[in-house]
Image (cartoon, rainbow, N blue to C red; front, side, top):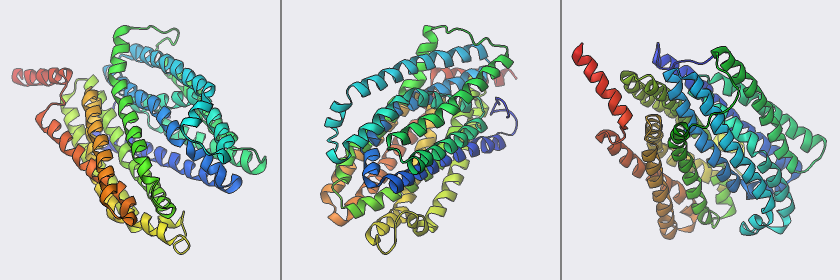
Length: 464
């Protein structure tokens, strides 16, 4: 397996592409495994089990967002340290942050199990699915510790230019996950809690693989893996990178939760079509968002190496390739909207749901174009250390989305309300891109560190 790599060296366009493709494939595989597991649960355990899994999905995603949001930011800090060749400090930052996130993961798991009843009362969980939902939630939340290790190692690998490693990990965990789901649900006829256990086992295998790989990697670097030094400056910088990303992810899930009461008032048929369109949207997002991650890590490494020209070149390449990835994927979904929807719905028996999904994909997906730029701006702000601006930009999107959604649901006829969610989403994307573009053009995103590197380059050119 290819080791760590400086993304700003050599042919950057080629490296960007080779870096982005494994990220995209890994994300799409994860989505595919989720589809398969959902189908297995629905087929072997029935609609009640499927509903039991869905009833706590948003809460689980909210808890997950705390960790993968924070660790995304830590991964960017790792990119900067890798660009500086500070490998001993890099390892200590990894160990220190894993210690912190593990303490929080264990605490959340214990609290959720102790207060599970009260949580379910707040969620108004139906008596018919209460037992199944409780079983799934209790077991899944116990896996939070290994999940956060998996996310952390994924983002750290990306930060060090090793995207093939997360791709291999995704394949291995997915095979274990789907195979064990089939064994537990179909062969052994066990309950939905064992579906959560299958996920935990799959991730645990991959986490062990990551631990061994990184231990050997740093041994090759000549860095000792013993002990942790809790350096207050490293903790502060970790928080500077991690907390804005964490708040960003939590904000994203919170605004979706605030709009959920509106979508839940729509007809079952409309919700079914909306759900299928969301599956397509998640795949589309997986492509261009992971393309953007390549750009973020490249810029962060160049920041660490103080290569201002490489940062500028990386931004240009990111815009070009992000639009290419998005354009190709969008075109495929628009052309094959009926075929994709047909994987989940029957065009005759589910005619209304089928129409909703196809209409959203064909007529409202193009507006996601604006979010391609938002995502690239997020990556740039995060990479240069302007996490606060990234969070403010996301907050503007979130507030706009909620406000637009409530306005549209108040004025649109019942048959069109479900489309109002995506119209509101499109409006929120446009609102955010206006803000982010102004910030970028005016240079407000440039941190003191970036300005310092920029000034040193100007000084060097004048001397030359």
